Length: 143
Image 1 (cartoon, one colour):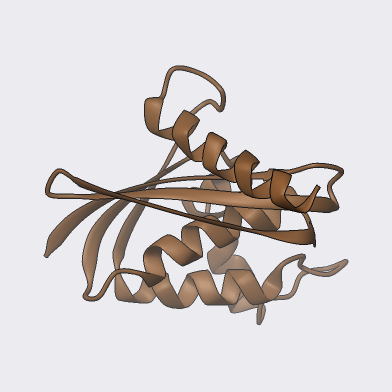
Image 2 (cartoon, one colour; image 1 turned 90 degrees about the vertical axis):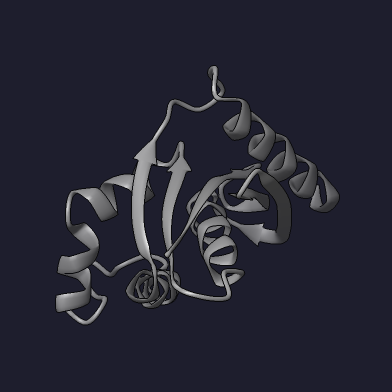
């Protein structure tokens, strides 16, 4: 199984408001940057979209380490929230926000062996900072 490193970030101005996402995929020393945005979105949607779009690019099952500054994503996976939401049909009392994105991410997690690592945002992680610049640049296109 190929090993891939993915770094992701999302940005939003207003929350909701214009937003962007960025991701860097690294395989065998080769880096690929991807990014996108939306005119009216939330930060959490952009964080999720970055992870989904990056994983969706993988052409075969891979061992993946996703590094993110999103506690929303890292905690949902690492603390078992996603498993509980899935068992409840992607609902929760009061409504599960971004259910369609969580469903999509869950499907990708069934294909790949994914580990999520949280890093502090806007700190010393070069790749996280690059993803932030990608996300902000995309957000600015809609501002």
